[in-house]
Image (cartoon, rainbow, N blue to C red; front, side, top):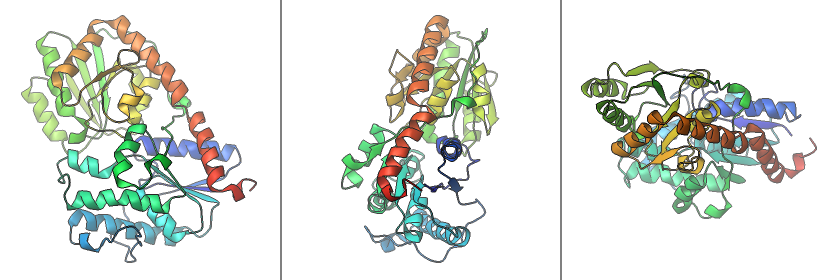
Length: 379
């Protein structure tokens, strides 16, 4: 079986999808299923003129809206790039982004299409204060889910929580399969170490949806109580200056290090003690599984896929979103009790190795692919 893995962002971009799919390609190639990757380079913007045909709703009423217009133009750009670059067929296409999925369906209508929805663009925009919930942009972006349902031979997502989120926007949510993200264990090299001062680390894009303002306020409470720590923030984004200003305002200038973007944070993480990310929403939260495989204790919010990865008090700690006091209390427990911290980290590592292995993902996807393209099973 010859497979095309269709991404939106290039593979070198940070994030769960981009850090997983190249390893999937390697595994499928090794079992004799030739697999190519395809994505849209950043430089390709405003090139497309041919529209992507939509079948479940009319996009015309949205064209004057800037966000909807940009999305529709991106579809046209991806279509232009696909037609120019792909000159061969495949037995199956697996798309990992709505734009890639809708374009591939138009260019290759007879090729079986598997689509995995990894995250929600509209939720991110709402949480980041860029669009209004229920507004025109939200209506447009939410309509894409039913369009994907129409296009895909198999529709997948990464957590039961996110399937429930999509349910109001599709006709048959029960038909959506769940395959949680998986990770190649060879990327992760946990080390046994003793840090005199507890080292906290977070890895994310610096946007409001990640709740780092809550993390800084929780750290201020820790400092007020006399608990020593250092917080390492890996990532970049539009609110970096705002967060740096808040850190200074809270008296945390000497307790926090902003590193900016890092391509392979998993090479850095094993030297720390606690991974913490108080997200306001996560479809899966790949970075938690990655941190677990680095043998870190986990602290997260009980939202989306995070709550499916962490069993509170067993392999990590869960707190409500937007609750700095609860987050501070959870971090205080781990700073004060090194034995408990170690137990949580070990349990998180055990679960991640079993539940989030790339071998498990490949096995599940092989079954999906064979069901979607049974005629290609022997090719």
